[in-house]
Image (cartoon, rainbow, N blue to C red; front, side, top):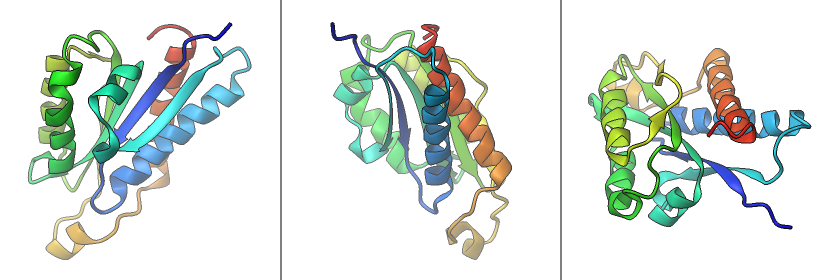
Length: 175
């Protein structure tokens, strides 16, 4: 008998590498958690996909989500916002009540982007299962803002823990 596949979709965008690293850490944490837990439900998949590659069908096929993106000028990056705009009509009333979490990479604050995604997720009628995780890079000059980022090990660990928590929630049938 084929059991239905449940999945965690990690949709991300990154300009300088910080959000990409955080998304990859969340995916690693989720996959490691599922491998480590011998009692976990079979058939749970973790998909880590750049926002440009995520369409409404992929969103609807997922059981839970982690959205990962940078804050640019106090708002969510354009590519992440476009992902939400592009998929909105195809997912509305089809993903209601599903779990989500959020990771934002920001130079100094991140709260504008976090609020923006929270409002979008409210419109999608998703259920937040963790406080937004905001990783501050402290990039303040044009040169530092544009430079490739290396995320601190502690922040990558936090992202991995968040991925593991969502994967375990799916495994346990919580979401």
